[in-house]
Amino acid sequence: MNSLDFEYVNDKIQNFSSVSERLLKINVHTAYSIIRHCLFVPKFTYVLRCSHLWKHPSLLLKLDSLIEDTLSSVLNIRFEERSWTQATLPIRHGGLGIRKISSVSLPAFLSSVHSAQNLIDSILTPSLGAIEAAHCTEARNVWSLTCGNTDPPSNPCSQRQWDEPLCRLVRNSLVDTSTGTADRARLLATAEWESGLWLQALPSPSIGTLIDNSTFRLAACLRLETITNVPHRCRCGAMVDSYGHHGLSCGRSAGRIPRHASINDVIRRAFVSVKVPAILEPVGSARDDGKRPDGMTLVPWKLGRPLVWDATCVDTLAPSHLPGTSSCAGRAASAAEDLKRRKYATLGSSYIFEAFGVETLGPWGPSARRLYKYLGSRLIDATGDQRAGQYFAQRISIAIQRGNAASLLGTLTIGSDLGDVFYLL
Image (cartoon, rainbow, N blue to C red; front, top):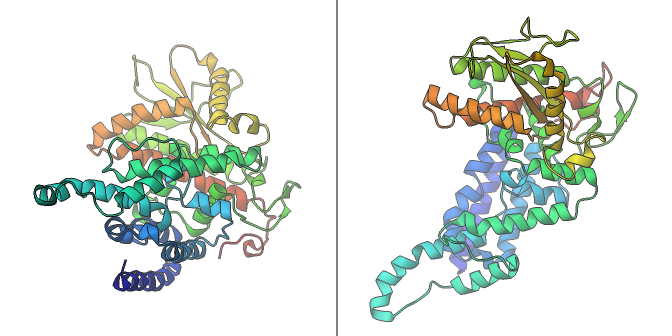
C-alpha cells in the first residue's frame, strides 16, 4: 500500500468517527443494525478484498479500536478482553455479528484473489504464462499457519469458507478457557441458532420488533456476560451480583409471567396466520389437578386431532440446570419438555400434545424445534414469504429477551431508582 492508500484509510476512519457519534442519538437496536449492516466492515469490504490490508496491523488496530469504542458507547457496555472477543464473532458463533476489520481482512482478500484468478489467467496467461495474484501465496500461508491442520476451503472463492475455520478457532478457545460451568453453559447456549434470532430482527416499531434501549442493552450483557448492575439485594432477600443472573431464576421473577404470556400469544397468532383458529388456556382439556395447557387449536391439526401445546421457559444458568447446560446446549429446555409431557400424559389420545420448551439464553428444546419447523412451513405456504418462518422464530426470541430484561429489573425493591443500580443511560 502506498501513501495514497494510507491516506484513504485514514479518511475512512475520520468518516466513521463522525458518523459513530450520531448513533448515540437514536434507538440502540436501530444503531446496532446500522453498525452491523452499513458501517465499518460492510463499508470497508471493497478495500479489504482489493488490497492486502491484512499486512498492516497498525491500521487494522485503529479501525478495530474505533469499532470497539463505538459499540461500547452505543450499548453502554464496558468490554473486557473475553467479552469483546465474543462480541466480534458472527451471531451463529455466539457473538453480536459486529466483526473486527482484522478478522475479516484475510478471508476477504483470499476469496477475492481466487475469484479473480480466472480473469487474470485469461488476460495474462497467453503472453506471460501462469501468474498468480500478488500476495496470494503469502496470504494462504498465513491462513494455514493460523488454522493449523485445517484443509483449504472446497470453494476458495467463498469468503465465508475462509472465515469459518478462523471463527471456530476463536469460539473453541473461549469455550476451552471458560472460567466455570456457568461461563461454559453461556457460551454453548449463545452459539445455538435460536439464541441470536433477536439480533437478526428488523428494528421496526410498526410490526412490534423494535427492542427498547434497556432491553437490548441487558440482552447484550447477558449474551456476553458483561456487568449489568451494581450488586444489590433482591426483593426475595437474595444478593444479586454484578451480572444480574439471579433475576432469571428468582422465584419472584417479574418477567416470568409476561414472558410466558408473550410466547404463547406469538404461537397462537402463528396458528391463526395459517388459518388454524386457536385459543389460550382451553376449557375441557385440564389435567387431573385442574391445570390447563397453554393453548389448543380449534380445528384438527393432524390425524383428525387438535393440537394442544404448553410453553415453558427455564433458566440456562440456574444452579440446578448447570450440570446439563454446561455439557450440552439446550439440555434444560429438553428436560423441561420431558417434564411437560409427563404432566399432560393424562390428556389421552384425543389430542396431539407438543411441549414448547425454551431457555433464557435462547436455545429451544427438540419439541419446540419440531413444532416450529412444521408451523414455519405452513406459514411460508400461507404467506408466500420464504422468511415467514424465521419471522415467527424472531418474535419468540424477542419475547424471551424482553422477559429476561423485566426479570433483571424486577430484582429491585419497589420504589428504587433504576438509574442507581442498572447502567441503562
